[in-house]
Amino acid sequence: MKIRYAEFTEGLVTERQYLELLYQQIRPKHATIKIHAIGGEPSRVLKECNKALRKDDFDHAILIVDVDQHQRLDEVLTSCRNSSEVDAIVSNPCFELWLLWHTQNQTGYIESRGCVNLAHRAKVTDEKALTTQFPHANYEAAIERARKAWPGLTPNEKGPNPSSAMPWFIDLLVSPPKEK
Image (cartoon, helix red, strand yellow):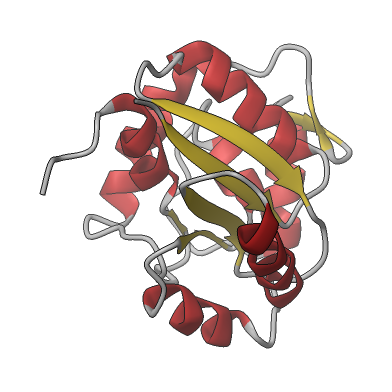
């Protein structure tokens, strides 16, 4: 039986595009995903996720959010830590960092604007979308870079700048869940 994951993203375009490409690249045998591009800040994403939990047919929800300057992010993360149905994947400072790690390393502190500019110069993004030459198959290099930046990466936490917990989510897709 496949586990049905629902992803709720803060971004409307880039995150959705990335998740669709990732799912096509990995083709998990034990999981399916349904993407909900919500937009707005993390508390809005969590609110829409909670509404969907009451009516949609999925087993577990994953929020994909940025640190940016969100005032209520800590509140959202606490809610996720207290939930058995929802986890949050946080990229610090922004999701473009995770995308950038597909092509190059970024080890030092970086502001969101600088990260977005680097991703654009590296031809990873064009405005707020992935470029046609985005190297989605390089997700393993991105995982390695993310684990070096934050060795203890975990969901429902805000890692150091730079960091992303996306490898945790990819592990869910790649490896079947452990039986209890």
